[in-house]
Each structure stands twice: as structure tokens, then as C-alpha cells.
Amino acid sequence: MRSRLIRSYPATRAATLTVALFAAAAATAAEPPSFFSALDHYGNEDYAACSTTLGELYRQDLPFPDGGELLLIECTAAAGDHAAAFAYVDALLASGRLPLGDLRTKQRPGLDALRADPAWPAVLQRVIAEEKKRETLRDAPLRLELLAREAKDQAAQHAAIAAGGGDAWGQTAPVKEANATWLKGIIAEKGWPGIARVDRDGAKAAWVIVQHADHDPAFQAQALALMQKAAEAGDADAADVALLTDRVLLAQGKSQRYGTQFGDAADGAMELRPTEDMETLDARRRAVGLQPLAAYKAMLSEMYGKAVR
Image (cartoon, rainbow, N blue to C red; front, side, top):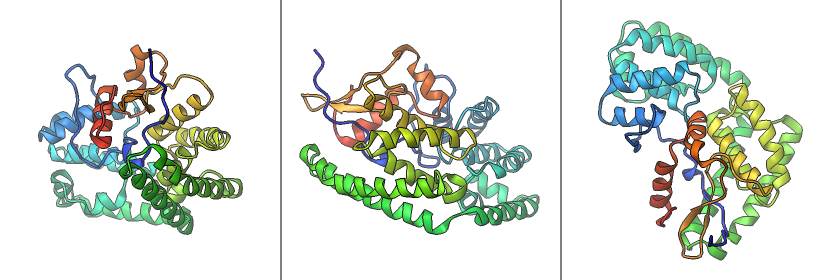
């Protein structure tokens, strides 16, 4: 008999599969080529395999996790194909997802080699021009407010985790409710704060606020519709849309689609909440840039210090 699930996971932004750039990730031998298998290649310094894998995903138009486009450029350059790496830069400049500051300054083998290439100064001018174009579209005060509210959310979440969860989660309610009320007003006035307006970190912060607004499922459903439209235009992260989709479906009494939400079982373990069509789950996860379920469970287990099933 299944135990009653009393809390939805993941509770914090750190558990949302926003991948730390170029961090190692586990992949199984049976896993089809994915962003996460490319990360394994990169960790093993097999830059050619990393570039080939990511290049194929790029050609299939599959979404990368946040910042993943830069890894495509890094692996391609590290594999020695600077012409292809520069072509990726030019193709991705207008996407809004390429972290231009990291492209210019992050120290990695491929990026360092690319910046030493004689062709770099001309490319740099195009990067600078795109940065200036983005700056004219950016709402800097809104971005800063989103980041500040996200920081309060995360502080409350981490305090609850440190206190052992349970009743401690109730202490996060005032922050979540205040953030949701504020964001509803922003959306009514300005629309969804997407990547173009508040940059990648600001858009992520807006999603965090909505993801944690379980007290207001109608607001979550409204925001999901806006995020879906934004994602179609490249103005929101597909993985974020997937996580919010699961939250909304569960709140409506339906099975989740991407297997991102877990609950506390009676024995203290974390257990996957009802999920549709388990046989094709990993394929759906891959299509939105999420890692395989087994790897996700391992990440949650390490993060929360609990068994995950």
C-alpha cells in the first residue's frame, strides 16, 4: 500500500536541474545521447565526443539546460574546430540564451583557445553589439527586485530544510505569499518577465516564485500558460516549464508529466508522485532538457540526505 505523500519536492531552486556550467553529471550506458552524456564526455576530457553529442542535439532543436549552449561552443573549440565554434557563436547570439559575459571571460580550455584565435576580435565586436542591444531591452530594476525576492525565498527554504522540514515548512509561507502577490501585480502591469527583459537569472527567479506559490494554484496555472508561450519564443527555459507543468497538474488532481515532483512517505523516504506513462518518461524528460529519472533521484538523495524511490 502506498504511503500518504505530504510534501512536494523539489523545494529549492538548487533541486531544479539548472545545471552548473560544465559540472560533471552521471549518465548510464543505456542512456541515449543527451546533454548529460555530453557532460560526462566533457568531464573525461573527450571534447570531440562532447561536441558531437551537443551538435546533434542542437541540430535536432532539443532544448539545453540553462547555460548549455555555451558548453556546445566550449567543447567544439576544445576539440580544435574553431570555425565551427565561431559559427555556433554567430548562430546563438540572437537567442538570448548565450551567456555573453561567460563567453567573454570564463576560463575554460576551449573558450581560452577561442579568445586567442586571430578571428576573435571581430567576433568580440559582434558580441559587444549584442550586449548593447540586450541592454536596451532589459528592465534592470525589475531584474534586481526579482533576484532579491528569490534570495529571500531561498533563505527561507534552506532554513526549513536545516530545521528538518515538517512543520518548519510553514515558516516559508509569509515569504512565498508576499512574493506571489507582488509578482501577480507585475504580470498584470508588464506581462511575464522573460529572459529578454530580465536576463536569464531574473527569468529564473520569476519561475522560482511561481513554482513555490502552491498556496495559489490558479496563479500557477496562469503563469504556466504565459511561460509556455514565452518558451516557444525562446524567452523561458523549457525545463522550468516542465517543472511548473508537473506542479499544476498535481494541484489539479492529475498525474504529473515529467516526474519532477516527489513527496515524503511515512518511512521518511522521498517517493515519486503519480506520473503518467512511466515507460516513456525519460524520453519526455530528454525532450525538455531534463536528465534521466535515475540520475535525478540520485541528485535529490544527495541534496536532501534521504532515500529516494
